[in-house]
Amino acid sequence: MSVGQTKSTLRSRNDLIFDILNYFVLSVIALIVLYPLYFVFIASISNPTTVLNGEMWIWPKGITMEGYSRILQEGSIWRGYQNTILYTSVGTVINVLFTVLAGYALSRKDLYGRNTIMVYLLITMFFSGGLIPTYLVIKKLHLINTMWALILPKAVSLFNVIIARSFFQDTIPNELLEQAKIDGCSDITFFAKIVLPLSKAIIAVLALFYAVGYWNSFFDALIYLGDESKYPLQLVLRNILVIQNELASQFVTDVESAEVQQRVASLLKYGVIVIASLPLLIVYPFIQRYFVKGVMIGSVKG
Image 1 (cartoon, rainbow, N blue to C red):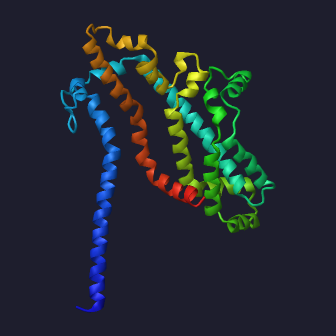
Image 2 (cartoon, rainbow, N blue to C red; image 1 turned 90 degrees about the vertical axis):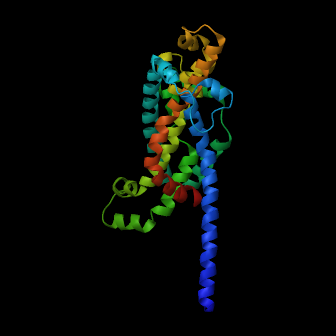
């Protein structure tokens, strides 16, 4: 066997060893990440006694749908879903629109005073007026108890603007803009017909960031919303589990013993986690490829 063949064989063996170790480490990480989700799901359909006693690890035991049945019979859950879908849809569209516009404008070298603008924007990342001044402003604008109180105050995230700006700087070359202007293309036409079609990855990333934020948010609704019919899903679920004992009692009106009440409460706890997480788990795989590309270009290079 020649020296070249020996080096090639050793290199192949090293590559094989590296691949095995790599797959092993990634498999362990995936198991650590996925198992809690799997455990919550099987716990939501298992006998709570087996869960509390630590008898359930891999497979559900004493399968029951009582928790889901009680949850889905509660009308506030469905209202919460409707409200959250509305807030998430409207808010994400507004956020992505403003963020893309701001990011593209700040990426343009011909924007007068863009460095000064960035300095002022960066200051807002470290200093804010706080909760009370923000509440007073929203109240003065008559936004209390409206969905706009949850959307307008956080219509733009500066962190996401920086990611979008970095993406445009690395993806849209100045030569492309100069060529378009030679052909008589205006700035608006260039942005609408050239920039946006080339920015699907960063738009998907921003949409995911904002949508997850709206979907998981409950504190703003807790502060600004007083009408329970306008509560988002997360606040409804929080009230079921933590705040409103009288609402929880609606699930257990037919229960007398404390042991069975604890059983129902355990089923509800795991069930609402599954119900709240399921939509995002369904949507994420469809935009995952854009997510990876957008983050790599937008944040790593930025």
